[in-house]
Length: 152
Image (cartoon, rainbow, N blue to C red; front, top):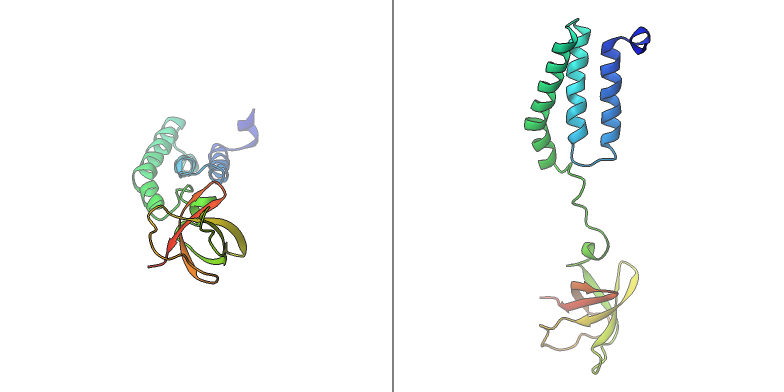
């Protein structure tokens, strides 16, 4: 039925394009490798090879893409899951003290990227307390409190 409307190479090509579009939503470059294999199948169909050879060429092309192209793309940074966000994105950044640290609670306030956060010195801090306007480094985040230390 569908073979009456579309030629085999067009079906392979449409399937390959569909997989490449789906790759946008699925990180890891897996669907793209299969889509590249489908382009190989489309080329085989366009050249007039029988369907069995189209499948073999599509499979071999996909395998080659997995073995050679995928590792290269992942090395270039196309893995899709290495972007830091939230608390992880601010660790190691500088903050400016906006409210002195209380001697009893050890809490103060610091500003980072225009946002004012509650802050506390890390347990390893033994030096002098920072005053207003001094720059500290974020060591970690505990709930909604920045754990800070003096800048070396």
